[in-house]
Length: 368
Ligand code: SF4
Ligand code: SF4
Image 1 (cartoon, rainbow, N blue to C red):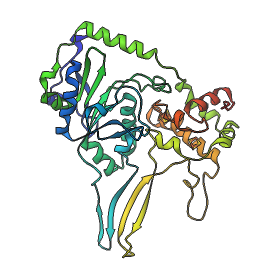
Image 2: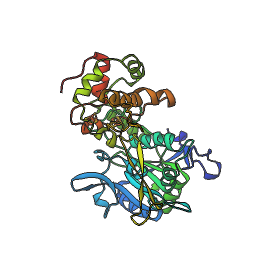
Image 3: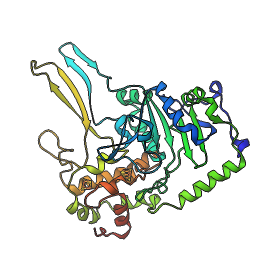
């Protein structure tokens, strides 16, 4: 309701929840669609703009060459936005006899446009992993350097974020645009977002009416009715615990190719490996490289001496699903799955959160 919409002045705003500076209470504005393009184009003042764009036929997070390239509000990128914060590969530092020099060159001031609610939740999950003790300085730097411009979406064929409680987001963005067709509602979630609004204050309208709120509620209701996939997440932690020795894991393992695609596309997967690469001319200088790893790979748990703690595919599958459906929820009270449906699309043999959830209930591996 309009009288509940409060303007939070920067000097009295509650303390930020992270170094990134989100505030849990927000200002809500309106914008007419005719201003949207000019506003997005003005954001390059705050950093290099990234958005979902098509490259070689694949939707990906990249720098758009022009506004028309940006794809907003529906289809998700193949690789999630995590790649901008937890890069697939980068150099951590150079070393030699005298010590090491950190390399933060992969970080830059950025404005990431079009982040859907579930992916904002995925970044908040990654914050819990990388920004608590010990803080990962590389991730923290990318986070500090990045502004998040969220954008509402309508569920795709495989989305089930309503089941994981990640279809709506209340923090973790600087601005969030809800596209209601005839106008946008714009949530301002940080002082940086407020600064962005000030650049083009004339594009925004402070007076959100009762009718506008009704339109937003109707949009939410319509969107809720569009989900085609769901599962009962609340029952998963118990079922995972009870089914740890179930034959369903062997059934899934017979199919699994250990390709790791499920982990690569998952917005909350964060495993990595580090490798020291020596300079050709020296045995004591070089660089430390960090790259994505996957707990689905056979050598993921291989240790010195040749012992492999999870040499069997069934063990690796159990590890992943325990993490997604039970362990993370026990630690943080929410699932590590944000319901994006990417594993549904990526796995070539139909092993994903939905088929595993079904098997945990029926005790049978669903047919392909
Ligand atoms: S487990 Fe699957 S649906 Fe859940 S966040 Fe990861 S890729 Fe998305
Ligand atoms: S579950 Fe599917 S995507 Fe994941 S490693 Fe096995 S075959 Fe690959």
